[in-house]
Image (cartoon, rainbow, N blue to C red):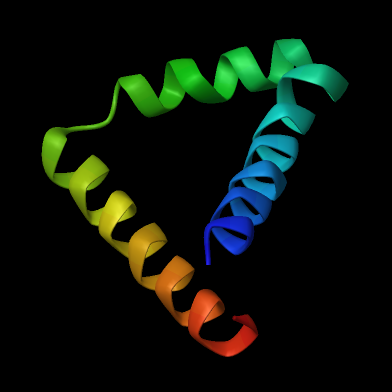
Length: 61
């Protein structure tokens, strides 16, 4: 179980690191745009990401 969790965490870190590695200026602009969103929009986006992650994890783990 711990091996799976650390494996998934490693994959997440790799994917998260690709944006700033490949296109740092575009990544910075995206973060600036996200930071200007309202709290409600950020919560909705976060909730959608959590649900998508749960669905993906359910199918592949």
